[in-house]
Image (cartoon, rainbow, N blue to C red; front, side, top):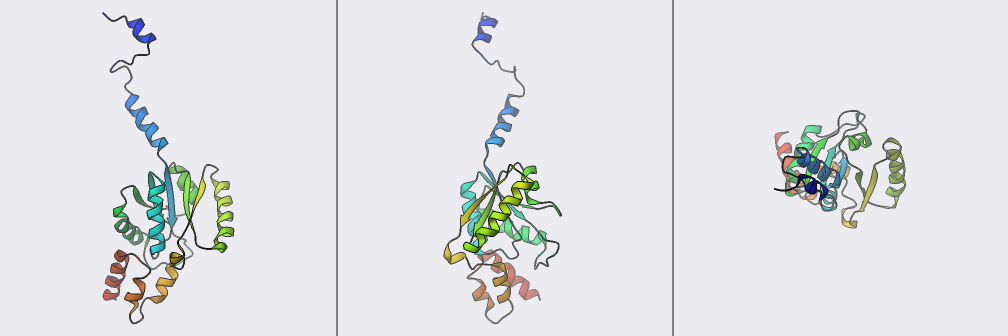
Length: 197
């Protein structure tokens, strides 16, 4: 017969002796998981955005792509439409999830609610550095646990802005030109929308 006291001295764990062990292990794994947020309006989603998501999916165990809106701005697509397009494009990345930022919630607060400590940002040119420094300081003032992680985009993608793409829409041959700036799934959505109008 095994001496119970000897077993306890050796630190033995008996089956059923710790019903919360599995839960503790799961919680610890969640805490150790490296999570990041990549946020934007994504109106429209460009190849530059796609590149950020692709690289972000390599940096983090889980990347949350957050669709945000500024109430002072007008958008071509609704929040729901933008999120739906993102989910289509992100299907190839199993560790990427798409969420929408609740109205009037600041991103650093959202990050805290999601237990995320890193916000992914893209740098296109030197002028971006000053703006990004100010943004980082602002974010830290709201949530001291959050840090920005920066990626420098390829020079070939630095001119891939949503406003550039939208300026091309409607002209003769726009499909061929826009195809140079956006993922094929987004081009298909734009063509389908154009055919309805």
